[in-house]
Image 1 (cartoon, rainbow, N blue to C red):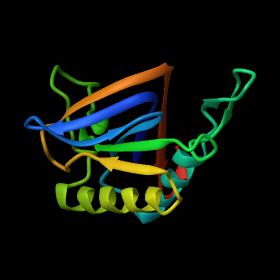
Image 2 (image 1 turned 120 degrees about the vertical axis):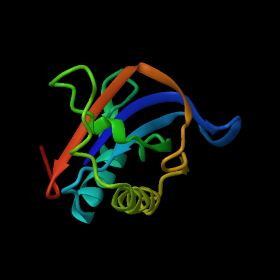
Image 3 (image 1 turned 180 degrees about the vertical axis):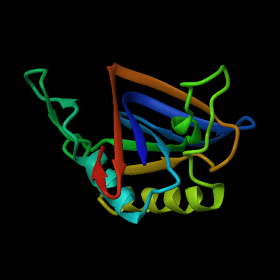
Image 4 (image 1 turned 90 degrees about the vertical axis):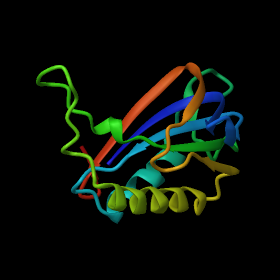
Length: 152
């Protein structure tokens, strides 16, 4: 499972001109499920995302978590995180989970994040062609990966 975290001053997602979600200070999480991912992976990533200390304290050091700063989250399903570009000129997606399975893991991940008392959780629409606005703060971006519930 992969989660690309971007610390943001704001973010939003829309589909066909309809805004589905908007957040202020917090994280935009681009979420991808792989074909071998399990609920353990989703649990690990949810916990890591809300507790990773990537927000600045009074001294300008990354020492605060999303929960510490009362931040918001925008979660976007993003199967292209599993695009393999090592061969040829077209990405391969054989490592990405099948849509039905990926959607179940995406829904579980959203619930697990919300269950951790995040101020606001906004989401995109699974499988939709989305327009995502990300105002990356820093810029600060981290890629988290798991396999069998442990970091890769």
